[in-house]
Amino acid sequence: MSEQRLLRCPACNRVHQVGLSQAGQSFLCRCGSQVEVPPLRLLRELEPVQPEATATSPRKRWEIRQMISLIGILVVLVGVAMGYTFWSTTPRPRPVETMHPAELWNLWQFYQRAGLPRRYVRNDPFVQEMQARRLWLIFAGVIICCGAAVIVLSRFLPAWFAETDEASGEFDEQAQNGAAGEKDSPQEAFEV
Image 1 (cartoon, rainbow, N blue to C red):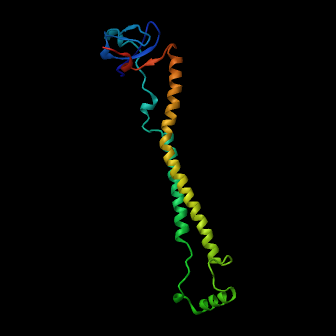
Image 2: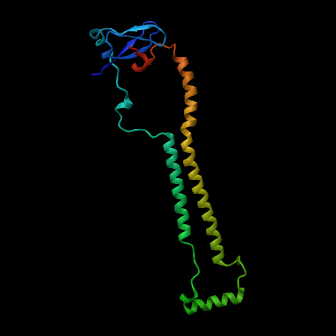
């Protein structure tokens, strides 16, 4: 059985939550009028406060900040996985000592035809592969930076949303102050 009861202010009709321990006392309503809490016998006849649905739900919903942080973490992990994959599978030239004689002969013929490379040979498949992998590694680094930026920005989102909620909350509170049936918590409404 709920210990809290709903009591209406006779002047403004605002609903207040009062406890059974407040029986026989009075408090000041937001409208300025003094509200008398009835004796315990009559207080028990008032409507009890219904428990909220969120109080019975054991699961807590994720905030937008947490969801955006998770997305940022996933983006960083994808970037790290891409970078590691391209870095670890980079083709490396084999040392001459480990080559089979037929491979050495093919390498010798290639260098006889093309000549020794000065800096980079653009049509060399090894150099082209290394350039392509370098671009993929840069792309993975950009993805990691974007994910990190999303994680950092998600830390500032609650402050941005709180500012807009406070501004709209003040407007809503002013608009609803005169409305009948608004509930106040016992901490705000009750004065000893």
